Structure formats: structure tokens, C-alpha cells
Image (cartoon, rainbow, N blue to C red):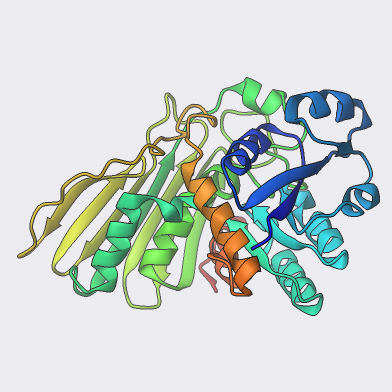
Length: 339
């Protein structure tokens, strides 16, 4: 099959991860980048080795099959719509947008333009996580009774001071939950299933930002189980993200992408797998590997070539944002919010 030409919207730090992935692929080639900042055009061309355009129209006039959207979260929607209007398939960094309503808009738009829309939730590709999914799906834990996600991380003030968009409501949609927490929340929902209601509380206690630097939620799942979420960027020194899954027959705990406890009745103790991509952004957002991103990009290319759905489509990517939005709404109203 012919190679897929890839363009990237954005020139921030995450683009380095995408370029590293694409450079290792025989199936895809990076051909162009877009930046809204004309002053960054020259430096970006030197850094990434491909033409960089500072107008979206010029960028989309290139021979591009797939656009990877890697700009500010609150600008994902406009980039997705522009790419879809030009007939380009789209793989977007998390979240697809900052609210469920905006996500619904881009899902409908891409469907109308007959282009594929995928979301990069790469932690689903982790080897140990896949073992947890298999265990739960095959019924080894029996009826699920509780599922918890803890993203108790730390970011110093410089992390926010050096960015014009992180921690803002307009372009980040919040902070600790929707930016740092969303990957782990996605994993929790992927295992535990749909959420029926949420009671939440968020606060900004340490950083000078609009969004929350600590937050928590109590979840009621459709299957009758309950759960909790805690997240923060003010929790020094930052601890690896953690998922706890409890069923009537046992429990599994994951931390930093690795299984730390596997206690299931009548089931052998797990043997740790080797996974070069394991790592946590607990204190450093760059302290993760790129292999899981690479798996997502390979899947997206294959979806285009075989005309099938990508690994994580829009409606699936929407679920974590809907729960996070419910936590925000509950914190404002001090009431239980139903999804």
C-alpha cells in the first residue's frame, strides 16, 4: 500500500514525540507542519526538517492524507474542522475538545465530511493495561464493585508561567483533571464502563491559574459499582498515576503503567511484562516514552488504508471529557450531576 503523508498542526513539545514515531514508520511520512506563529516558522523548519506554514490554508494545500492535531486543546475543534473540510483524516491529541458539546460538533462535522476521526489515548496500548482489560473482560474478577483513579501529580509554577494556554479555561478547559488526569480517567472508564452520576469538587490552591490544581470525584457506574477520582498538579513531589480495580473475586492495582498487585482467587500471580514505554509524568511531562504513541499512529494509518474505524473514535474519546465536565459542574452546583 502507498505511504500515508502526514501533516501536524502545532510545534509544541508533543510534536517531538509524533516526529520520532513517524520517523520510525515505513507506512507514513511527515511532510508538513502548521504553526499559528509566524515567528516560529523558521526555527520549526530547522527543528523538524519539513516545510512549516503559518496559514492553515497553505498547510492544507499540501499532499496530506492524515492531519495530527497537536495544538492547544481549546483550538482542537477549529483545526479538526479545517482538516476535515479539506478532506483530510484526523488524529487528535487528547482531549478532542474541552467540552462534550464541542466534541459532539467535531464528531458530526467529520462524519458529514466522510473523514476518519481518531483520538490519541495511547495509554490503552500498554502491555500491562491490556492484561487488566483481558482479565476483567474474561470475568476473572467477577462482578466489578469499585474502580479508582489517582493522578496525584506535581507541576511547578514555571510549567504554567511558560505557557499562554495551560491552566486556562479557554484553551485548556480546566487543568489537573482535563489535562493531566484524562488519560488515567479514560483507562478507568474503559474498564469499569459507563458512569451514571458524579459528585465532584475542584479547587485552585497553589498555582496562579484559572483551572483546578486539585480535584476529586465520586462516581456511580451503570453496572452498580462505585469509584473515585483524585487529581492534582499541586501534590509535591508527584506520584505515579494509579488505577485500582476491585471485583467480587479479586483486585488488580496498576501504577505508572505497570501492574503492582494481582490478587485474584484461583488465578496465578502475574508475571511482570517488559515494556520500554512505561513511565509516568508525575513530576515531568516529558518523562514518558513514545512507543504507545507509535502504536496509535500505526493503527490510524491502518484504519485509513483498510477503511475501518480507528482504535479510539470520537464517541469513545468523549466519555472521559463528559465525566470531567460533570465533576466541574458538580463542584459549581454542589450537587450530584447525572450523565
